Image (tube, rainbow, N blue to C red):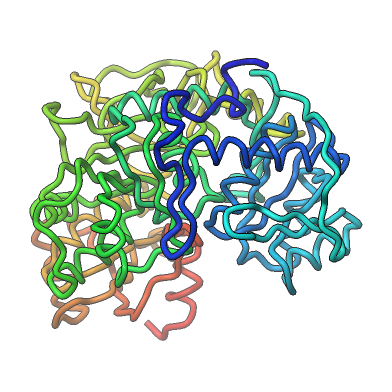
Length: 504
């Protein structure tokens, strides 16, 4: 069995230490967790699971998910986790695109079950009996076991899809070698050890929660605390009860915890570090987090095609620079000319961020056109715009296709978001492009308030901090902003959500 695969993920020196802690449920030692993975992998092999083909996993954050994910990988198959909140049509697309051989769902009615049945894909139910996963088919518990085939480094271990920012979602196959390279980069960068306990707040079907917080911790010998879902009202109790040393989240979650901090009696000295990823963290929120929770905030930059992390702020005593996503972490990062001719820019010049590394996928699934566009001279084009400083710190200026083009002026939406969030009454903010006959595109913004303000006062604030052509023409006051399941705000949906339903 190759040693550089998910089959050998668990830290070898922590057999008696806690690996997974389920609040209100079981706690498994590393030895017990490893035994459970082997047992369930044997059941999957006995049920006829074919190595090399995807298995769709539709389970919430739970012990069942963590066992099934690594058991599928141990059996030589490809784990393809899916968001439980998808519609039937979405499930059908993702299952068919991955060519899933099996779908694993919780017991009871579920639209994922309906989608699999429509496609004729076999279904297994996964439930928990104390600390053991029970697999059943049509009400009959699986008992027949077989020796699972061990995977190799170059076998595909994980099949995910891009979020479809500019087109239909693309399939991303990631090998064991890709994943283990990323896990090692994350583990080493944050100096994770068996003394660490990660509080899981992100969904595990996404690389942020899965790679950035869960698998990296297990590889370090630390403990995972996995609530069913993130709840701000129980976060600090769970953290205190389990001596949490860090957590990783999108800015939305950080902002929720900040807004409730005093009411929840949040500590002023909390974690060894706080990690932020998956969306830009405004400098003002960075500073508020460090000040209120008394912990260094490390902003990271990742994407599915890179098995998650590409860069991060350095650990103390390294310099943390708000507004940047730190330095490359085991990955080569460069800035390429916007025409993607292969010319690399010098420090300070803005262009497309490109990467190389063992964690980077080899290509999209069955999509030669996307692959031809995405790779230039061995560099993978991220689709993000930014620049590198002389000292190697990376600053993101936005998704290239999300830049607002107002009469030829390219406007970074991240810059405007950051200024909006500096307004004392603004809790959340997002700006976006709206078509305009005169200028081509103009800037609109939507905000959620935490104090008294109106559209004109917010626009006046913006006018004090940016050029007139960047000031939002319209500011919508909203109760909430539309988000993805991982808490990300997708700009491409904002014009439809706000501009098309208002009489501005």
